[in-house]
Length: 449
Image 1 (tube, rainbow, N blue to C red):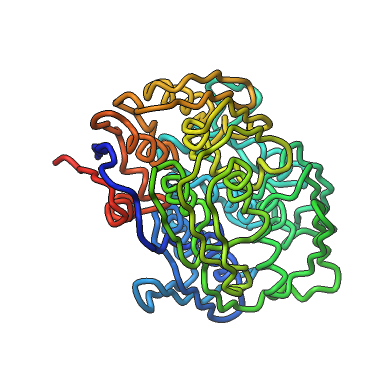
Image 2: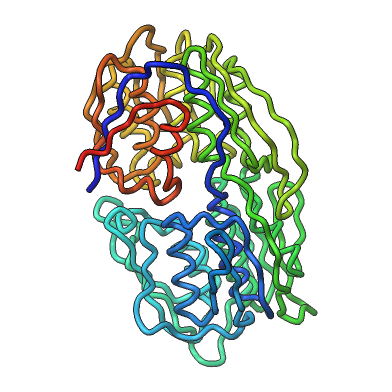
């Protein structure tokens, strides 16, 4: 496992950089392209480990995925009903998105499949997806969760559906806004006999709906409600030609690093600004960060922009309600923003963070305190009191969570001495060139042998 050592910032962060392509869109482009009738082209593919896990799984079930260049793939789909039984378990690596979306797809297949993952993924609860899929007739077995007796974890053994049976209709009201649950249920609905209707408390990211509609799926959306009615549909998904925009979740680490570092100004190019994903940009503005967003049209059916952030005096804020689902992956780096703001920032309605790659509420509380930042852990969030002056040098365990590791690296730029962050291989799941990008902007980071 690789550690990194981050040194205190000696000069402002400056420059313009790209970020990896949006991995949420990458997952869906690979998966839906593999189900299409024809050849799809995917440009801007980042090759982060999470997306690679999805690519390997779909190839194992018959999709022909070919490298056109370092950042471009072609995907020859099997058609919706052409998947074949894989020769062994499908390894989802660290990717919860891969496992949950595949669960929805595989629930309708006439063959048995086992989904496995790394140690971290195999601790994550899966009943949120398994429950509604079982309710429409799916056969899914999981390992009992060690601390949640009413939940299951991977390995998940899925199917097969008995010969002559099909998934049934489903009307499901999700207790939380979750794009992964929504996507899994919609995928299963492509094969179901009957209507699929999904409602969530607020609108989660809508990349699945955008892409399926573009491919000809019979979807209708009204706010946080999406309906899929296959009656009269021929069961054909048209191939896609997509340019994946930059990942706003990855960009957030660089934008916050600039916002909290005196004299800094950083521009991130080609970033997707889908409104279901831009909660972090609103939080930056609300807390007083210097921020400029210049629209650059659309890319792959998604709005894109050039975003510049610069240092200003930050003020504490209250973060909760509908903005949280639109910033759920960015809440760890928002904690770093709060650590350098004046006053107490309160984050609520973020209990979803308890079931990510780590318990991000508990882990961020440990990280903040290691740097000398005063905070209180709450059931659904954190109260963070901004820290003036240099932070305390720390030794931080990422717990195998890429967003914790990157957040710790940003905080470490403001410590009074070097900080060691342990177990940083996980960063490659979403931002393989994170260390190099921060170095290009002016940070000093060592990767000890």
